Image 1 (cartoon, helix red, strand yellow):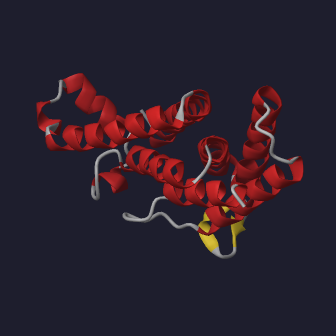
Image 2 (cartoon, one colour):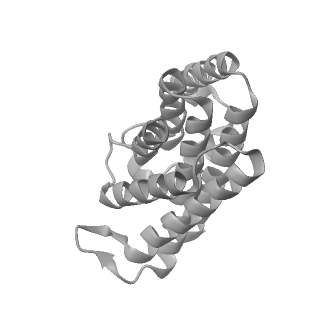
Image 3 (cartoon, helix red, strand yellow):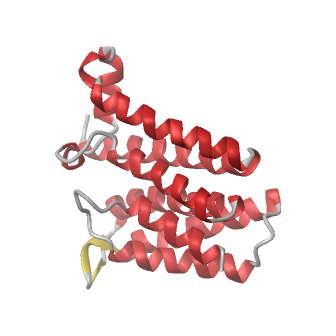
Length: 198
């Protein structure tokens, strides 16, 4: 299977996982969420520690959903930082702010990668790994998602505020370069939740 198709599947899982987490955050009590996400971090470390003892199909699935460059640093890096960012934000900010920021990260990142990889013709002058088309996809998809989320669940953020936060997250994401240590999921969710809490 081509790397492009694998990346598409990775981002589809990322999108579905993130949307489910955003809805879960909104629906459950904060104390339950803190327990669940703390358990998620603990389970992650157990998986890493006993990875070689996991069933073969589970090992293959985890490796398939991880980028090769990320595996040099840690298994399931993106998922780990996604959960860690949510846990940190649940401690510091309101549930609705965290759920909305999670949606921005999940939807925006997935669509920016898919569109940028396939249709990104105009590279950003300050980051050659990103394209104008990818950044536009991040902004439009994340804005659409959080406005729909607001309409569906009535999270009580002003429309201007939601659009502004999506724009700031888009600009921030466009500057982030792929790194073994710094993860865009962590940065986008924390910054998004912080801005929505102001």
